[in-house]
Structure formats: C-alpha cells, structure tokens
View 1 (tube, rainbow, N blue to C red):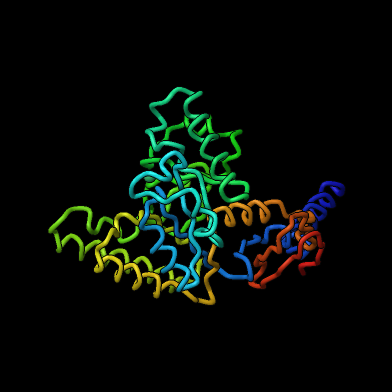
View 2 (cartoon, rainbow, N blue to C red; view 1 turned 30 degrees about the horizontal axis):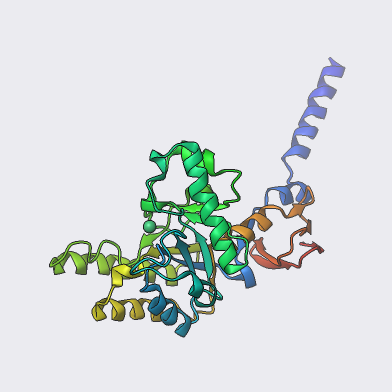
Length: 309
Ligand SMILES: [Zn+2]
C-alpha cells in the first residue's frame, strides 16, 4: 500500500517534469526558411524560347533595364531565316543564360530514346561550343513532356527543364525537371487576332499577378516565359513589353536571376549542414547562402561555419 502510494507520487512528479517546456528541446523544431541571395525574398526569371531574330531587340531592351534573361535555343535552327546566327550568340547573350530547347524543336515525347538523347546532347554540345560555358538547363519544345522523357533526360547533364503549364503562383518548383512557370508573358493576350476584350482581360490578369508579386512579403519566385517572335514587329506589343520591364526592373527587393542560378542556389541551400539543434551551420558550397531562423536573417559564406542562436 505504502509502495503504491509512493509510485503514484513519483509518476505525478515525472509527469509534471515532462509537462514543463525544455528550452533546449523546443529549439529543434524551429524552421529554417530560405532567402534568395543578398537576403532578398523575391527572385525573377525571364525566359524566352526558340532563338528568333526578334531576340536581338528583346535583349537590347532587357539590357536597358538591367534585366537578366534565359534563352532556350535550337542549335540546328540557328542561321535559318528569322532565326539568330551562330556567330552572334556569344556576344548577344553575354550576361544572360543560353539553354537547351532541343536541336530541332520536335515533340520529344514522340521520339525513340536514342533520338531524344541526340536532340538534347547535340543541342547542348553545339550551344556549349558557341558560348564556352557548360549549358545545364532546358525548356521542353511545345512544353511537351511525360514521365518517360523526364527519366530519359536524367544523366544528360540537364539540371532543370521548364514546361509551359502556367501556375499563376510564385512557388519554388519541387521537381526542377518539371518546372512549371508562373505565366506566359501577357498571359493569353494576343493569342487570337481582333479580340480586344480578351486581350484586355488577359493583360489585366497579367499585371495584377505582377503587382501581387511586387507587393507580397512571402518568399516568391516570378517566372515569366515567352517568345520574342510573339512581339514580332508590332510596336504596340513592344511598348507593352517595355512597360512590363519598367515595372519589374531595378527593384532592390528582387534578385534577378538566370534560371540555372536559382537551381544552383537552392541546391546549395539544401546542402547546408546543420547541427541537431540547428544552432551551428556549415556551408560547404561555393555560394553565400541566406536564410531566416526565428525571424532573424543570417548569411553563411562559402566554406564557413557559423553559430545561429
Ligand atoms: Zn519552342
């Protein structure tokens, strides 16, 4: 009787001890939130496909506003009528990213494995010869892909592949080989001729999304894609493009990125080494990484270990 009373008291004591919050234990659950380079919470990717001759004017306009683009090119099309020439690629895209779009722009999902491999490796090899930089990204021609294609491109040195499935969201892609962008430039405006009402509706949605991006306080990635030939030689569309560029350029809260920069940065963030209680962090990558813990911003230089208390 005496013993059992003692056990009850002991159990009650142990329970009350467990109920108390141990400050060392609570530290473990604190989330580490990624920030973009320089501690920025927003990043912008602009990507254009096909390497058509209107890219010349587009790049000039982007350079005027200090914007960075990613250009997905078909190497076997370069030199054809209305396409860029091989000789101009390196200089034109200095400061921008050159990326794979397959050698000939076929529907890749209709091809045999060896033809898929040819389309991607041949394009990579030729673009690398032109720019003297390893080419590591891709956009699916026509946005056409399936699981078999994704499996096939693994091992070919392609680290991301952009689709054309617009999300109208600012999320970080979970699978880089199935990278759904935020939206097409100007949405579906101008998709059908002589439909001014539709154009207006689509442009309103496009600018509303841009404004939401500019105003959000959340971690946000805006990824706009398009084709320079869609602007063509229509001055109204060039003015619209300049209006869009003006809106999103030279904003101190935005990290302007090549698409591959985002891949490298996220990979480096995911490779940070934390102690169990998250109070010590080592950055084994070559990039300076920024993150938020407990509402405070930290940066870890390449190769350094810091305390994050
Ligand atoms: Zn294309």
